[in-house]
Image (cartoon, rainbow, N blue to C red; front, side, top):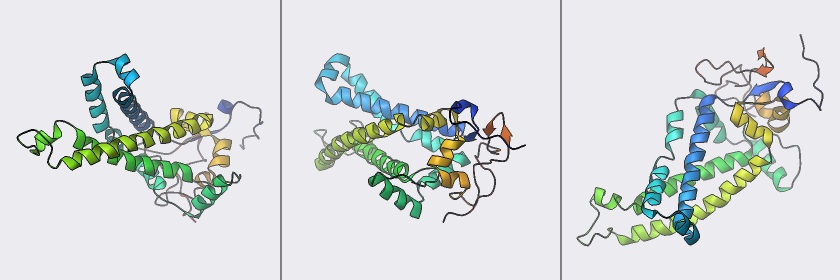
Length: 259
């Protein structure tokens, strides 16, 4: 029996909801965000004098900073066993004409921005932060005090060979870290401006009306991966349009190809 139209004043929790993320994706995001926060906070304690004096124990802070940075890619690597996560990574790396239209409309502050599961801004952020993490990891390893000895790259005096590697790595690492902090601050600011988006990442489901308004191509199946659409609006259990995901794949009915 068709569901009656929802009243605009009805609470979001009482409206039909669509499965957006799996538990695996939620945990990967939470673990990555936690490690990134530890990296940023410990970096602040190392570079800002007033924080360094307040926290103290510099050797411990350095160790925590190093290992949180080394472990940063680990949650994503472990999460690659999830088909839903792999499908979303494919979506994040796939751009279409609608993404150009979205960016043009965003720059001109216009409405009517049609997007798939992820809009163009989210795709650009994901690509930039992934590249930044890899560069930060590489330069951080060159700066790591125990790495030169482990690789046998030290002279009798204990200096890195060549020394210019460490100097250049420090320069890139420090300035890129500042850029990362600014970009992440913008990401958090945008997230706080969209409570339903945060709710979707926290609970795995989003309001159906919000999804149709903000991500219509995803709801319609236009950004299906390998012809598989992860929104199944046929099965409705306790008000939630669930995903027939089997092994937490997030796979649903067939969807049409991207335009």
